[in-house]
Image (cartoon, rainbow, N blue to C red):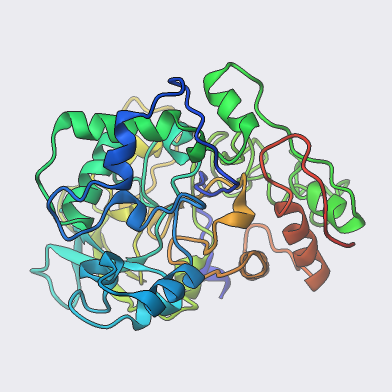
Length: 409
């Protein structure tokens, strides 16, 4: 199993959060022109608005949300198109996992082994939260395929709401609304950090013994240094920086500081049994086609991105003048890597990971226990108590500096 956890790197970023969102705006008290577009406008499509899938409370939808809405249904536009099992009927998948179907185009260097003429695939993915992400994220969707909020809104309206009747001004207003409205931030501290030149929130210390042990996991220290505890620093290697979304200098998987893409074994494990594709990846540097790598995965992630340099990844092949310390990583080297969501307010935005395979924070901790146990680079045994400690601390990450504990030890 260890060979499933590759050494190529670990790059991070996030999209998570919560809170009783307020109506405050960086633009003053008057309603933002983007609010009606986000909350009410269907653009003549299939009846969906932005809030059909991006709730005011969490910026996403959970399994519980889906089941409650299914009870009422009555034409709820969520249960149309890509919300259905095959795109036409059935709600088994969305009821169980709150995922939608996403069609992705195949780049020239990737073909399907079983269908070489195919130009696209369909994967099942969760809906990224719109909390904190619109202002702070450098690119959008779990594979980074949208460079900015304009691209993101365009893709959502065309592919998700099935409409093309929108203007550039509509897109700009939707984007600006998400960047400036308080409801898109998990806390006052993060809103002020974004708009009022305030300092970013700091990690809480924790009050209970369990929370304090969990806090050590986010220390910016070298987890391979025997002077540190067995779990100290293991989360910070990827969840560092102001938004807890960057690799730090101690990342042992090859990710440079500030990197924002990661692979933590979610697709390799595939614990919700999504269909598995077999891809043939041309790793011959676009020359003679002699290096073909077979990749099996339910979701190839950033492998399909048309220009991975826009994600902060090195080009392939490297130019002749590239610094010698930059690795020449082939296309297949980044299969099943994803943008890692931010973790401020994480307790409020379940489910987790790109495929919603973790329904709870306990599931998240269990996935990391599996990842580290099967890691050839940094093997670790996370005990049940370690996992509880991780969860206890993550529940404190509201984004305000005065987060209080209400859990035991």
